[in-house]
Image (cartoon, rainbow, N blue to C red; front, side):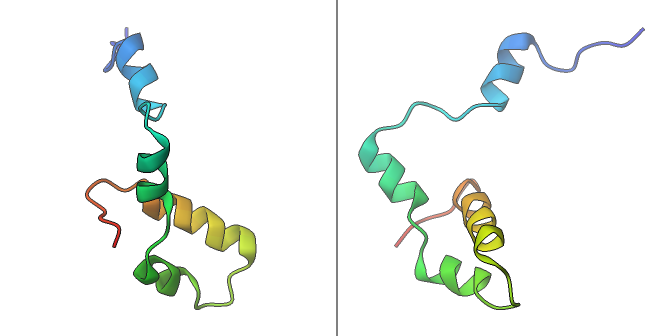
Length: 65
């Protein structure tokens, strides 16, 4: 018999983004120059770069400049 590690409420919270304002959306999801420099080399296509930027922007503790 398996036990659930997280409650249904906790799983929903982990699978979603918190409610944020438009200002916060711009602040946290606008790539920094360092983010853009990180994803540009290596011959990656546009979809790959976009995916990497989205992942970078969702990392905790990331500060935009």
